[in-house]
Length: 507
Image 1 (tube, rainbow, N blue to C red):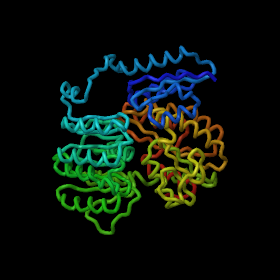
Image 2: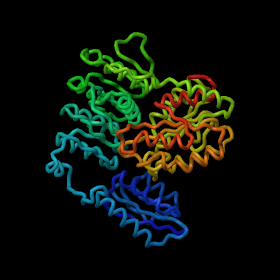
Image 3: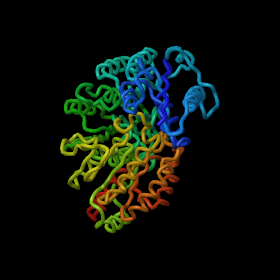
Image 4: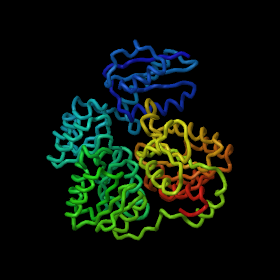
């Protein structure tokens, strides 16, 4: 099979540009494989495994770009076309037609823009340096980059705290500051609920539910997933809590995370006890609720949103419980297949799914579970009640994240259709900035194929988004209804709905 590869030395392209263009090109050219990758070790291993000669990328560094094409009918001229498309995508802002402005350093850019937040998305080897430069410019930092060492994270966060700034990350995917969504965030109304989260899709789920049921967000601050580890010690979560405690717009402080390290949990509780003029909601998913506490403790993301709304003086519905219609539907499907198969774009939602499922069903497995007995040995093949985060690095190495381009999940849906023991297909869809323009539309053909092959198997879906998101929550849900998909009003409800179809009772 003809294949061509070109190494573009010292040409850096951010991951969003590469993934978005790859997704676009794959739609245009379905007869070929396209590779737009930075020269990281992981990506070089991928190129080797495909079979490209080592001589084509000898000396590649993470600051170099690899452009490749493979297919039965490709020619070298196709490679030149790809390179031109890549350069055009980087040179032009498609929505405005304006040429992108370039500056030699972050400091030079800040001299012109006089900003107060820097969003950094460069290879991990360079991310810490750029974050230091941003902090020197007295900019809050959203560090989207991953592969930053724990040692650098601690140094950066201490530096930010000393300057009274935020250092969100590394690997921080979502934040909303002063009403502006950063990275993968949703369009939500302003209000009196401030959030701090060591979770991206968890923060999206809670903020969208708050918006959907009448509440609003003052600030939503991401910390990065390692912040509550023993090593990092909750530095940024505690700093953000103090900042929200001093924010006159924030009346409710809500925390979102998987359970912190025990010592970190104790430090956070000690700090919260000093904040007597704000209401506190703690959503440590899969964590234990203390028998006695002056705070509101939640065990699911939906409950976290519910308690936040209640603390803000609103009267939301219990949107985690099943409706009468859902209970009747669950009983109809009771005697069908054996297993739930949850195929996820959102990692935190996947974690919540297995957290709920293990309490009601045996034989639960996932690639995100920390429990040894739930470890999924082969992430490419499901077993038992299986919940798979398809945004994990093993799936996205050299490919776009499924929230941007869903081919990974579409292939897996068809794979699950061939398993006669599948009883429920469970899916999440995330709207908002950064996500695909029409996530449900991309799944329409495959879901029709699944339905034709397995008319006995219900498809249950949850759409994480708001009416204000450009993809429009109602339109996306209507498309799913037209496809015969069963809907839930929160992710936790979707999981309970799936469990109920296995047992024939409300969960």
